[in-house]
Image (cartoon, rainbow, N blue to C red; front, side, top):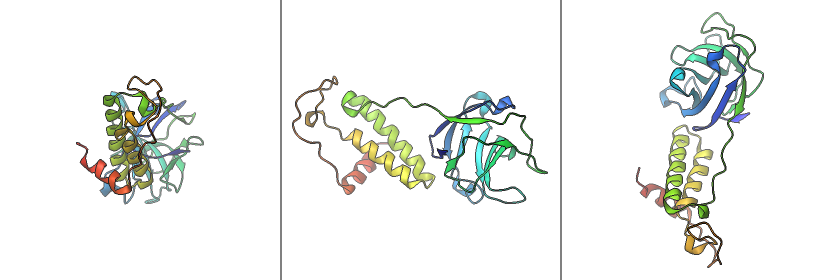
Length: 206
């Protein structure tokens, strides 16, 4: 299973319908669409993947609740499916061609396999210079905003806390020089209160 969050990345491979193979990234769904669809869908990257996506739908009009691999998210024509009542987790295996009387263009065998894209290790704040720390903190803030829009509040809080950790890091209070080398600590890093964290986030430029 993969947690379906904004920014999550997966690779679809081994699908008999080759147009479905590729890298997909999580995108927050428009709020007016979430009556019938999940809060996050995955969009295929690349110029040939502008319409291809993986979406979760509630049961309706003869189709079951589940994740659907579609050639066009607006036409809702699905090639592969896996039934699921959980919009927050994307199954990685046991997909099958979607065969139905409507909204169906069955994919070719074999069915796809999904794998999470490997993530590069993020350096600790003491291993970055000021510009790198600020850039990473802003990236985490934006990821938090996307998760918040998708009403994924648990992920949003994690991203915001990570942002605050990097933007408030003070090398003079840590065991790092600006060049990343260890040095004698001058004391523990001060933890911000919840109110201070919220104010810090609110004051960052967009």
